[in-house]
Amino acid sequence: MNFAGAIAAAACVALLVLAAAPRSPVSIRLNALRPRTPRTFAGLQALRLIAPGTLHASGLGMTFEQLLATKLALALVGALLAAVIALVVPIGALVVVGAAYGGFILPSIVVERRAALRRDDAER
Image 1 (cartoon, rainbow, N blue to C red):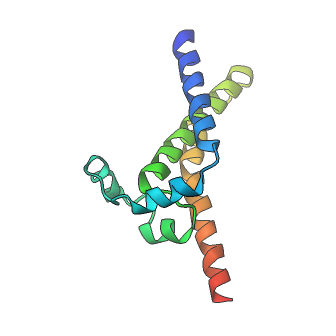
Image 2 (cartoon, helix red, strand yellow; image 1 turned 60 degrees about the vertical axis):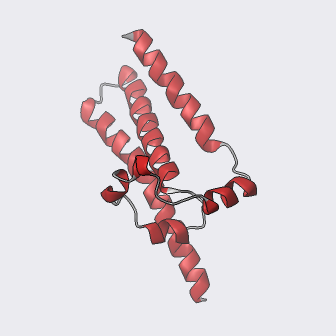
Image 3 (tube, one colour; image 1 turned 30 degrees about the vertical axis):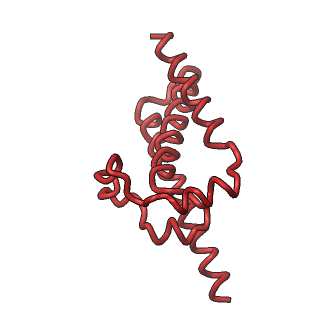
């Protein structure tokens, strides 16, 4: 069981490092030029995790797949952090689930706030 936890922790750290890496203008431009709906994620886009217009208006240059990967990575990081805290403080499994949910929702909040700020700037 300790080995599985160590593998999960290493995966979370690796995903966090990949998510925090700065994006170049070239990769943003290439993402804008590539087709929007690959067949692999066509079923996932029906979930409507966030409106495509909001994602585009945020100006982050992310695709739906990248947003989904970020949401899943932060959900894993939140669950991992809560699980580590649960080793020291008896907080229960509900807090771990809540931390995973918070990590899953956080990227959507950031995208929606960025889009709202850019829309406000455009109105001014």
